[in-house]
Length: 205
Image (cartoon, rainbow, N blue to C red; front, side):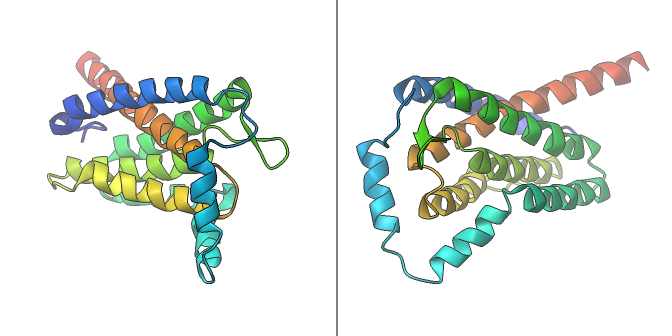
C-alpha cells in the first residue's frame, strides 16, 4: 500500500503547496508580535464566555497533543496500520507527524510571536500533531479503496484541537491556522518521499 495513494496525490500536492505558501506568509505577518490580531482577540473573547463542561472537554482534546497523550495515540495508530498491513502508513505517522512538529518547533523562535508573557506561539504544534494524525489516518483509509472526505475529516480534527487551544488560552486562532498549514505542507511531502524510496528499493531488489 502506498503512503500517498495515487488518486489523491495530485490534488493533495496542490493543497500542500498552498499550505506551505500560507505558512510562510503568516510567518512574516505575525513575526515578533506580542499581541494577537483583531480576529484573534475577538475569537478568544467569545470563547472565554463558554461555561462548563467545555473547558474540561478542551483539556481532554489538548491532552492528545501532550507528550503522553500523543505517544499513546501514535502507538495506537501504528498498531492499527500494521494490522491493516500498511507499513508505509505506520512509517508515515511517525516520520510525517515528527517532521510537522519539528517544523513548528523550529519556526517558533524564528517567527518570535508570543502569548502569555513570552511563550512562543506560532505555529501551534498541538494543531500540527492533530492534523497530521488525521491526515495519515485518512490516507490509510483511501489506500484500502475507501473514499472518505479526506480534507473534511482532517479539517475537523484540526478544528477541534484549534478550538481547544484557543479556549485554554494557549494559542491565538491564527497560531492554530499555522499549525494546520504546517501539517498539510509537510505530511504529503514525507508520504511522497516514503513511496519514492520504497519503490526504488523494490526495483533494486
